Image (cartoon, helix red, strand yellow):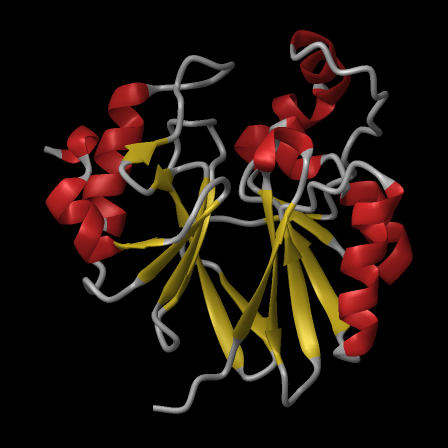
Length: 217
């Protein structure tokens, strides 16, 4: 089956965040997921790619509202005049982004993300001829979501699932049992060949995590 969507990965400096652009190269539409840009060089790299691919950015999507995933929301929202999406349960995190910066000892003074629309479990986000399905998997944060492309067999996992690990649950709103339950009931039933693109680190697959992830035994 012909693939609809492609993925560009930007490995950025703030906590090694992976920012993704998922795009339809034929329709020239794309979404920015977790804009972790925190300096002009990273901003330029993102914008140059979008201009080079001649993309219209239709949405900016936050898998959750921890500072490393949302610090660039206002920059890209203003630049591309696109709505910013997140799950409502993470609003307290977004409103406390300055406090997050202080907690991690960052000298930056981030702008509070302005969420345009809330996304919920089961929502479908169109990207050109492709689709991303929202799966709400709380535990790393109350509003953590992942984005699943059934047709192209990939998952943008945010900080829910990593290669050989899971998201930390010792931050505000974390819940270990909820995270494990959500991963087992919503992600592990997906096809083994589903590629998992995490918020930090290298990609993996659902099949690999079923076999080797020690947190899911």
